[in-house]
Length: 240
Image 1 (cartoon, rainbow, N blue to C red):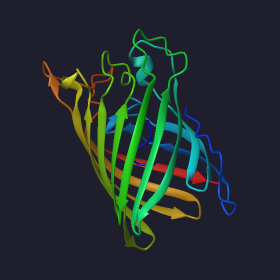
Image 2 (tube, helix red, strand yellow):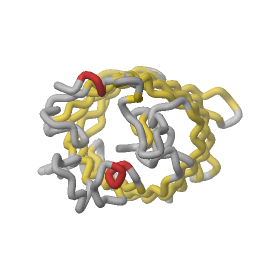
Image 3 (cartoon, rainbow, N blue to C red):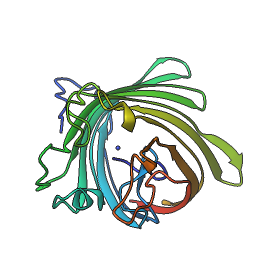
Image 4 (cartoon, rainbow, N blue to C red):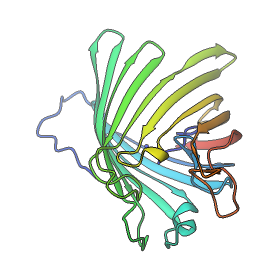
């Protein structure tokens, strides 16, 4: 589950590509003071190490990304990491109007939970100017929730160049957990970032408006802390 501050296995078969297409391979490594995914901490409000590989040619792309996590062990399982596999295609419908469609698999190897947290989503997004609207749809159960196939996430974000090399990124999203409505919620974030020749530094505020069940937040760690509480996240990512 990709970091809301730093930023996600299906292989797209390509039978023919334009001769002018140029393949690109990029690597990234990073760390964050808290791995928040859709507003919910995956690391018990603690730091995380992260990294990934991306390959693109023409509008097609494939990639993998991983992060340290704690929530699987907190749920009684064994996985220490989340590994994502994704692939898709980006293009342009008209001048200034772009689209992005693909598949994303969240994998938790050796999780040992009764209900598998492994999740596959298909997604589609539209970008116009600075704004992006994206819809993700789970074709499996969602992150270990029973009978949650067809859950969805709607995400509206924007990216503004505010001068001095800084980018401001506001975001709001709604996570619907099918047949588990007590765990549906809205999340918000706003982040400022700057790229120092491949080293991206970001600082953001994030919050998830989760429900309370019997006075306890729906998403809570073993230490009793609300995993969606308002917080500040500092992140660094180096791409090479």
